Length: 89
Image (cartoon, rainbow, N blue to C red; front, top):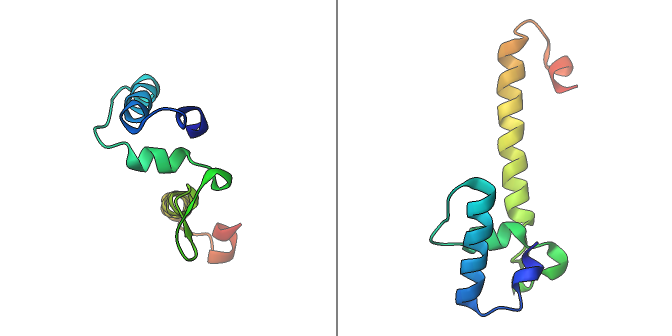
């Protein structure tokens, strides 16, 4: 969704993103950089250093890892008698 903000100046981009986040989540962050990154698809990203783009992929990786840990914790506690192989399934 960040593509629709890309035609505005930086200050306007922050205001637009703040408005979008406030509408979606009920609060408006002061620093929108991480939200801009989260909304930026890799096809719209630029390379910030060799091997690293300013896309959402690293945040996606982190989010996936957090969700994996939450699900693993839940399953581990919910099914205390299941072996590791069954929990993994």
